[in-house]
Each structure stands twice: as structure tokens, then as C-alpha cells.
Length: 217
Ligand code: G3P
Image (tube, rainbow, N blue to C red):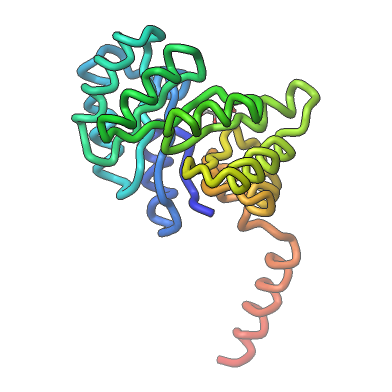
């Protein structure tokens, strides 16, 4: 399973990249706005800066919702860097736009996916990635990890090439469960990635090893 970081914060992206295990980045308008980025020039410069840190797919989301506008916006985003993946919402015009980008050799990430049926449409349109939001599914009293299992099983049965990118990750356990469910990619906040490191027995064991190492010197 590939690890993407789900943020537009350059310091966090650098920190995750320095671990040596980062495969890509996803952003969305909420995450970009959180960094105080405003206006097309600043947005595009920010995506360029992210692409210069991480050597892997960087999802840049369109801000429009009509076919013509999404195509125009996506073309500009894709021209920023070869690693840009145009992120498109799961709506009727979005599916048409994904098909258009697929036919024109531009990679896409179909976002705001909450059902297996939506994931089938994204794959049929040729999306490079599909993003089921598992944390938000859990928030609505359904099972987010089960949704990943369902989509992975359908894609395997049908031979769809779209990669299942588990998004809206909230905890380290979500990452483990997505790996078990066969997700191709997990996009996570830095806190969840670093949370994977933690185990009290590791801390206790290391304390003892450090103490014993001192007795050996
Ligand atoms: O990038 C989309 C997704 O990961 C959002 O996560 O925590 O806002 O549901 P969250």
C-alpha cells in the first residue's frame, strides 16, 4: 500500500517525506484554505512547491463544478508539473470530465466517494484514483473500512485499473485496516502516519536497552 499525506502544509509534507516512506500528496480546497492560500497564482505556486518536495502523484482539486470549467481548470493544473493529478468531485459533470481527462492522457482522482456504486462509475470513466472518504462514512454511522473492502472486491472481480485511495483517515488503526482491506493507497494526516510508530512496549523496551547499553561502556 502506498502512503500519501493528506495536507497542504509544506512543513508537514517535508517531515513525512524525510521519513523516506512517502509516495504522494493529496490536497483539497479545505486543506489549501487552511494554509491561507488565495488566488490562482498563489494556488498554482503552492502546488509547484509541493511537487518540488515530493516525487510522486500530487492531487490538485478543481474549484469549479461544470464540465467546461473543470476541463479548463484541470488543464492549467496539469500543466504545473507532470506529477499533478487533477482531483474531480463525484458528480455528473465530474464523471464526464474524468472521461475527458482520461482520453487526453491526464491523471485524475475522483473525490467525495461514499458508495460502491459511485466507485464503479469512477472506474468506468477511467479515473486513476478513486477516493472513498472512510472517516466521514464512519461519522455517519456506516462502516468506512467495509466500503474499502467492497470497492476492492468489485475492482478485482471486474479487472478495473483505478487505484483505491482510502481518504478521510482519522487514526493509525484506519491505516492498518485499509491495508488489510487491500487499498492501493492510504492518504493520511501526518499525526496518523506518526501514530503508527507508537507502542508503549517499544518505549519501555528501548528505555531498558539504553540503560543496559550504558552498563556495557
Ligand atoms: O482529502 C479528503 C479527505 O481526506 C478529507 O478528510 O478528515 O476532512 O474527512 P476529512
